[in-house]
Length: 243
Image (cartoon, rainbow, N blue to C red):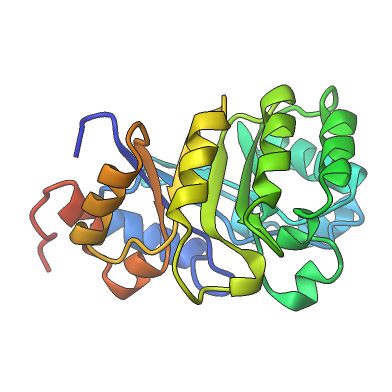
């Protein structure tokens, strides 16, 4: 692993909450960025305050935390960003990747990806209202992987700070293979910093993706870390933490 490579922990609803992040980063030192499970239904500031236990800390053991929002509402995204900014956060993440039908059928998460005009409109409307940076976590599409090719020009043109791509489509959920060919196209087309996510379960997996994706130096690990919490340290050639 090069000295510039970074590892992110993918968020999981009901799993990677505050307690998990605090304990994990205390004993396992090689994650470079954390993300909250997504917030949604933030219709009023008062609703957000009552659910803000996840946002008490901007870092866990010096590892930066990024709050994530799942929404298709401009005011809700801006309200969330303002609240997070007041708490000291410098970045929020927009979830365009959740694959589950109950979310996607409402044109949220990955269900918004077949509608580039919606994403364009939202990004335009929030562009001058955001007090924080906005990164995006998405899939290659919901119905087909080609959907991402219509979205990258929008992401290039509008002010996102980083693009994290899980290299599947939403309808796959977590089944089947990742789409190496289309992700390579994304690398060629995207002018923003890009992060690879999907099926990093071992050092061998990561090494293969390094070969496949020349130029990528930031990697998000999800299920692989939950199965093997030592994996980030193994990738970074660290000894196992003492217990």
